[in-house]
Length: 346
Image 1 (cartoon, rainbow, N blue to C red):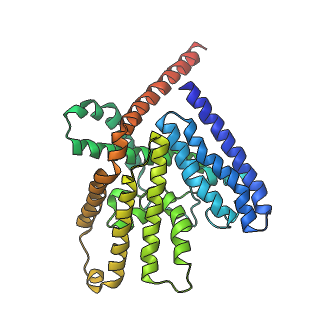
Image 2: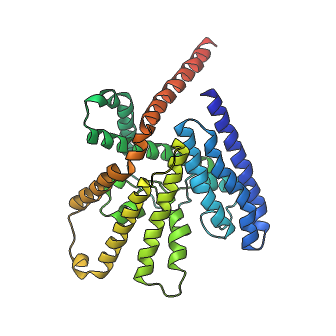
Image 3: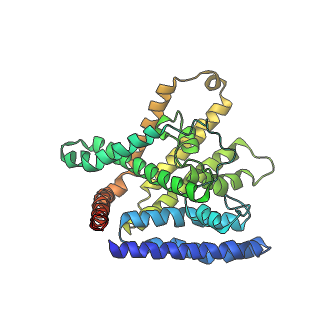
């Protein structure tokens, strides 16, 4: 654990140095092609780094933050687009916005419905703790589908709790308001609402800028078919990105099940958007929000169990995630007891 932690720190030092190089050099280059070439070595480094880790948490964190988000952010920055353009006011802002899944919130509104009460977050932490410390002890008595549901809940809670804590710390450090990464995805009333407005919003924004927008804008007058193809292509790219993420975690050849999951959702969401825009009956007929939420979350869960879950379960990723979570809790508890012992002995 200590060696992995040292490597983790070394990687982040290297990442900060690399992003600092981009901050000072890239904006001084006038042509887009040369700017793109200037960030290319950093992008290659960020794509290779996750291979050096043995734990799934370290590999996932580096792959998500640097390979999955920092790389497209830097490419968009070289093209004078994306969340890093225009250039942030100082180096700390640039490093944080490049390396972390955060985005500056423009015109923050304290009454925004995205800001749920603090007790909601505390409840999620409690549920996550109960999953780790209690529920998994009885998994041999649970049905397969129920256990898959717990795994899905585990992934969501760990992601949201971790990203919320990072957002909180970075917000305090930089002294600015940041957009939320999740917006209660279990309340989604449609696939468009789920993927576009509630789930992993920083990733959605990057995909919108890097894939959806260029396809929609490639012709002066875009059609509904362009919209359909842009949505489909965005989900296809997301699927391939998830296959690469799974490769970092498993070191196994991709099976393309995850890609098919996103292809299916891309097709369904494109059809949903087209249907809502073209069919007057759908525009007039409003489904009860409770029913639409149940249908949406149910569709995501069923297709996730069918196509998204088999690969991580087949390679034991969830078991490794759970064991590492428990090990991390025990590791930091032991360190805390040592610090408390030193403090009381003074």
